[in-house]
Image (tube, rainbow, N blue to C red; front, side):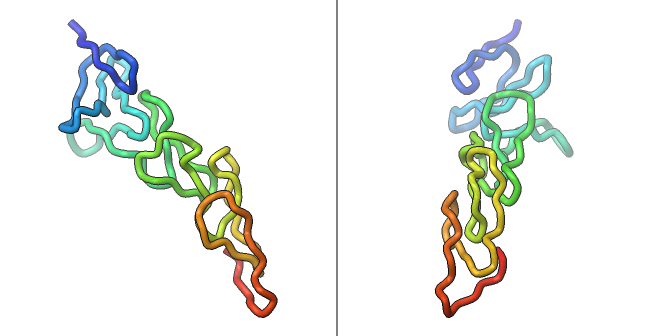
Length: 131
């Protein structure tokens, strides 16, 4: 018979793999490999497994889909679980956490922190290149 496992708080039928930290991240069903939020299936070159979503991607739900890309020029931490984890790096501005692209700061402006802050004008005696 099928076994039941809990993946991201929901019972799932099928075979399951439990990591040494007791956090379930990989689940086999008749529909394919289901991985936890923040993780994607790896099946090339060996046995099926799972890997964290790479920087610049995220996966919000437990399902068989892969990780989604953050908006243009945005970054995120490895294993991100939500679009809100995406942010604009230093030198770029925008609201990536809500789905907006990150745009390079215009020439004569700068931004030295990550996030949605706006670019700041350079002092009158300084100059900066775009980005």
